[in-house]
Length: 539
Image (cartoon, rainbow, N blue to C red; front, top):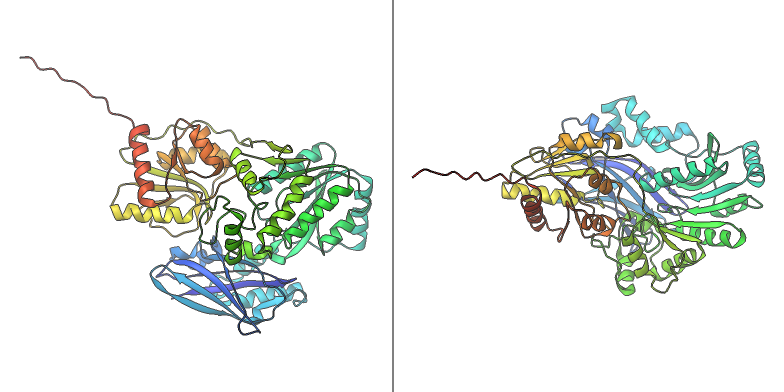
């Protein structure tokens, strides 16, 4: 039986954001697709949801159902100006029929439709009534906090004038970045800290996905204030006559109209005589599918332009849809202007430089600079336990692009073989896996990672990411701890594994071959060899 709820759906300027939850205690959700049918009967749009988000509130209510913990979903889409006639969710399961559920059109509200905060909370309560009845008021509070976390406020005229005056009279840097967490945000925080240490203010231009609003956040010494801003044009107007010292593009994934953001930066650089830094944390500069995962769900490695165009046309991923661009030629032409305008294009690995060059072979790369990250937390060496059998460790928050399906398939292979191999995940995974094979420790702090690694019992650590990561803190942390390390032949982690005495680059993502290679590597390179004692006998 499917249990589900749609917590929030918002449309603003023809772009949609939705999140909710759903699971079946008797079957595993393999895919979730939102299908929107428009008033023109032949017109429809399908968007694949990002399913498998951790939902502790749902898990708390359904405490005896393991599938509940990763039952969350998130959907982003560009729907154009079409009027929705019907909205449906298609729940696809492993070894079970697909279930179709309707999304009530009363749940879908456009910008300005909700009049007050009380109305917003009441809508949230109504949308999750079944969950709230079971969990009580605390669930509603947590849900509202999740939706409103980081939501910008509207500045009054006095606050806006103070901000404008400060921007005109005091030096500051402009930073463009998303607001969804991860390594790119960590890098942005460090950059802002550095600018503040130089007595320079910082103005962040970002996008709050849950409310589909642009915002500016002004950092000044020990204070920071976040305000909503109507548009890119309004942001440019705010910068009129401002004292800009530096401009940094960090990441525009999840921004509404990302190409307009890129064009804005190019225009700004032409009119402001200051340094423009462009950082490459992912491959958004190459494709709206910023991990370069194609329409079939595999890493594409930047094929020819015709293949890219076909893929982008049929791609159903939420982030691809949200970009609103299905023309790869237009995408790269716009981004190439930013790469040319930049005083520095900062790359964090040789692998990402190779892929960027493959997408833009005609560009002069004299302004490209390779600057590898450094670890923020020192990692002490860890001695792995002397065990008879392979025990695979995995570190991090393992979602779709980080290899959740890889671990799922690997677990099935272990069970199929009736193998003694175990898996310990230090962190979390967007999948429900059998506890007799897989142990999930939950969240950890970087400073405590060595003790988690030591106590896990794992003797070979797999980095299961299925895309060419530009840099991986986790991979470098494992290598610094001197533990055996395996990964696929993608990106910076593969380069690291090749240069590491206890590293191995796996030749396949097929679970049977992958398990064979890890077993062989463990047996031949890592497993302690028992000493042979020769006995002599007297004649």
